[in-house]
Image (cartoon, rainbow, N blue to C red; front, side):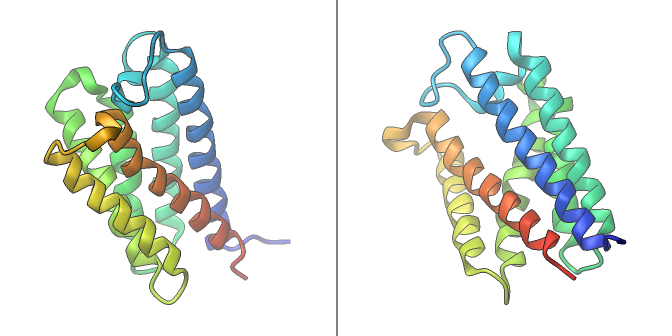
Length: 176
């Protein structure tokens, strides 16, 4: 049985995003005194959890990039940019400064846009996820964290993208 390009792309996204979610959580557990409210996600990319977090996000990025190259649809460039941004977040951890900020912005921005764009005529839940990501990104940039703190607000940007990635990957694996 031959798999089509969309199915392969979906499996790559599923593996990439799922392993990242797993190792993201492992890194939070292993990082001493880590607070999901006060610590940035990227704090996991420096110190004792750096090898776990950075390797995982680079692997996710590479798999999403490969996935985007297999897709023959008009939103492939958005998927590519999400993967590129993710890989660059791991290559340029937070202690590199500006390169890391640009990589994170690429990932956050194009993940939100990608969720919205891929939802057209498919799954309006993805639109909601994308809007949550983009609205939270604006609040985050304005440093309006509310009671969530910077770490909590950053998760309100990232978690909808993770949910979209797993859902979108699953959608692609069901293509005939």
